[in-house]
Image 1 (spheres, helix red, strand yellow):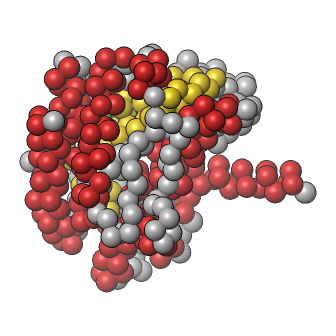
Image 2: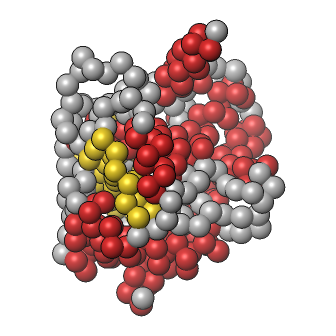
Length: 352
């Protein structure tokens, strides 16, 4: 009976992950007949609330041959636990600043969920000083030990931590705008879920681009471009869906009553995006996902939109496409706040 339940659960997870164009391999266990290049993935902050489930999901990914888990404490236990899972990748745990270089060396993809979580009443901006310092120190190490890795930034506030990383890499002479990503995939995951629920369409078939940034009103889901198309949603329902997507993090923080933030869904979203990056590196064609990257599709230096991923990271930053009047208004409204967050990150990088 347990085996039947396990197979059913695994099948459900596989169906859910296949709704993204990136993740047909993510939760597949029977991978032995497939041949994939050797790929090392490092998770920085692997003992945390996001890091642990993210480590689990990356261990299940057959595209990963070496999984390097790093945190300031607790990592050996996480590595031992995850390392017992019978999938392809070899797992190693690293703890403390003196082992950071060893954790990073040779990495193809570095995922950064490190930092403190958001608590009730706390905005993403409140997280800034603590998480900005953590991100800066980690990026200094990345520039030294694996300067060619694709960097997936999860640590909030992403609207500021990505510009911080860019400035650190520029100073080190290693910056490649194609290889730095702010992970906004959770906004996409939420938009798909909420849209499917309201439109009564199968969630596995849904796609919704989300542009802008990764905090509050800077998150702009483009429901006018959602597929499959639903003609039954009123303007008020679209506004409510937009607001719920923007406030998804707060919804989880409040539901957990001060005992955590969005860790499990963020780990899932981070694993989906990392999988897309690995597929791009491996030469899979037409891998397209939304991410917060250096961009010239608006006047802002960084912006989240659909990007095509390839062997060098970002192959192409795609345009916004046709927007509804409501979305055009949302785009103009988010720009000042997003610009301020970007500037705050750049200022921090130069002053600290």
